[in-house]
Length: 195
Image (cartoon, rainbow, N blue to C red; front, top):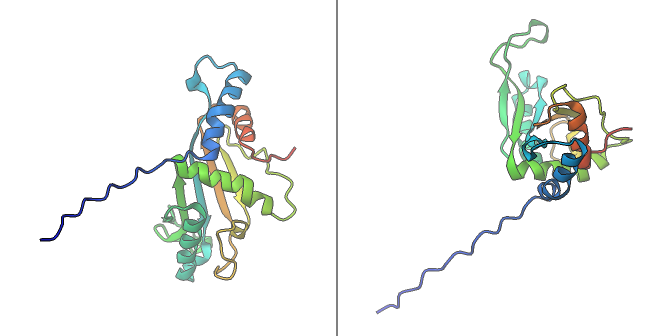
C-alpha cells in the first residue's frame, strides 16, 4: 500500500513595500505636514494614480502600429495596456468617432510607485540633453503632466524590436489642492524640476 504524501505547505508571500511608498511614509509626508502647517494628516497630498498614454494617429493606415504600442506600453508599465477610441470625428485628420487611435494604462497602488521610481531614477536620466522637467506643467488642481518624446529611454524596451519611435504622456494625479503643494510634494519624491 502506497504511503500517503503529506501536502506541501506553501510559503507565505512576503510583501515588499515599494521604495517610493516607504520614502513617502517616512520622509515626504512628515515634511509636507510641517511645511504647509496642516491641521490633520488627511490633508497631506497623496498620489492617486498615474495615467500613461500614447497616441497612435498612424494606426488608421497601419493597425500593426497600435498592437506594437499596446505591447510597448505594457512592457514599460508592467500592466496590460488598453486601446482607446476617438471621442468625436475630426474631418481634417480623417478620424471618425469610435476608431482606435491610442493606448492607455492607469496605474494605482504598488505598481504606480514602482513605475514612478523607474521613471525618475532610470528613464529620465537617459534623456539626451536633459536639464530637468518643466515645472509649469501643472493643471491648477495639483496634477502634473509630463511628455516623453521617445519610449526607448526605458531600459525594458528592446531597441531592435520596436516598430517606430513614439512619444508618450505621463499624467500624475495627486490629492494636492494647489500647484505649489503639488510641486513641493513631487520634488520631494526626486522629480528633477528645471530651476
